[in-house]
Length: 150
Image 1 (cartoon, rainbow, N blue to C red):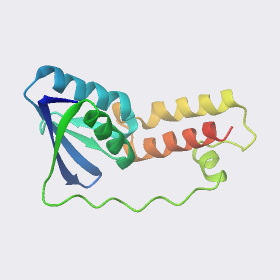
Image 2 (cartoon, helix red, strand yellow):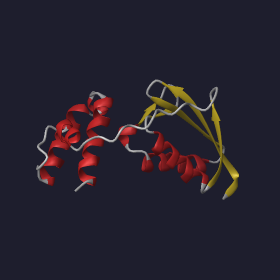
Image 3 (cartoon, helix red, strand yellow):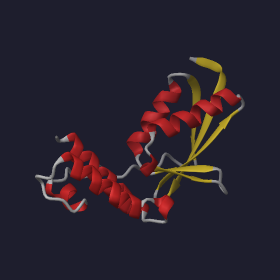
Image 4 (cartoon, one colour):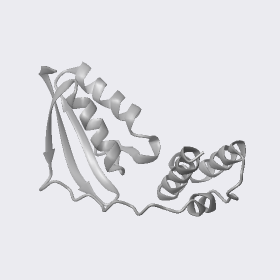
């Protein structure tokens, strides 16, 4: 572990998850933190707000994985705004019918049809295309559930 270049992470509570600000005196540490964030946290679960210089992270497990990766390389100081944010309760396990319904598919749809449906819906609902980010997250999770269960 490199203790000469600490990274300070400030986490604030937001409506859609948590806001993450990254502070590092060393450019290499800062670059590493950003590249790991982009590599570990999928686009559907992160959004950068340039005016606040803050990343909005909506998936706690991805945030934890990212922080663990940073801690394996650098000394990381984590600071919370008031208290450590309360994490949402775990989501109940969905039946397989729900993900197929989300992608407007029948349960016996072949993998290439599942992928095509996901891509078509992603084009419509992706935040970069001025779509609904919550709907995009739902679509991405449905696609992941279907592909992991095959």
